[in-house]
Length: 539
Image (cartoon, rainbow, N blue to C red; front, top):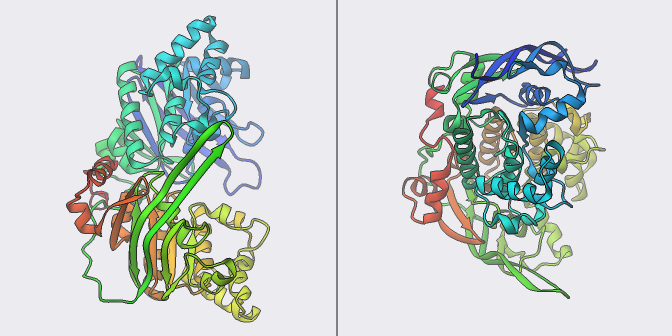
């Protein structure tokens, strides 16, 4: 096919000895045509990223060895290329946008120079010509004030701007193939919508082929031309976007689509009058900076926040990065000190308590963080992590062990696994351990701070069901922090929308979703990927 940019034929990559399976990917065949966006979907470990990194020649060859197949880039077999030849092809003929731009960009080099370095390596352009070209591609990806941004460092840009810099770098030499590896996973819903629209627009204008790796079927619904579904290193189904989304054939595809939370909140009965477990009144958090060479800068991370959560109820807090969601959570759990206002738990105002005064209340409020691997001590068994809190509050070792075993059963893990270390669990299992650790303290309030945002869609569905079950079992009050409006729709009784540290709207979830009043809430809902599709009905 003359319009085929990339063709993979029977690609097999072997894993090192002792791995959980023989091949990372096995007999993978797919094509990416000029002007196409081909989405590759599947859970962690399905082989999506290994496929992409093998195409780019970026896999660690000591650990991952291609043993069969061909990778034809415009008819040229990449598996026969030397490292030097691959370096030349990267940038000129193909380029990649990574998931986390902050780790992909050099933090001590200006972003304009990083884009320019690509041109310096691959072209004979003068320094002035390189700068002109860099500013052109920065304009091409709709970055504001490119001349000024040229001299900015990565940390001075927002997440969306950093991702646009990565896309500009990929486009600098106008390659025929663009590989995007989960480029919007870490972005807010509105920024994600902007980046997706940008990729579609660039693909249309430049006519390039795009291989887009994602686990988000909302993204698939918005941008895909064709869809490849991978499981355990194999392609289990492929077809056009409409074929896959409206008539999936493979049970795994049906399971993935059925696991996507609906954007329509379920009908919930009016909550019964219940005890107030958590209350915040005029909660404020102000950060200030000053220095010899700069004026003091004041940031109002949270301004006059009012919230009430009853026993057995889940209050969702949604908004973009910088909206103040996590600041409110950390103030409530007293990981940071509020600047002003009241936080009431069990009738006591903990906002101004000293650490010593706070200690008895630590038991009553627990938090589950976004990244379970960073939350657990890698040198301690999960059993040691779970029993540590209760034992610090006076529970005997034998009783704490029995409680840990019971909680492992409740969160769907075998009690025998208490002797294992965090790295011996999957991401979803580690998050279950973190939930068990929080419940071991028998709290009245559980805060989940983006607790499912890093998980695959099917694992996410399991953890959401678990959170719902433990809330009902223990009559917990839950504060659920998220930027995923689909997740919030399914788990939250009430919703609170934050923007720039201010609560702009709150109410029953179904009411806010059906009739949003504030323009910001409307923009969030409008930006949700795949908002017009009911995935549960399609599966």
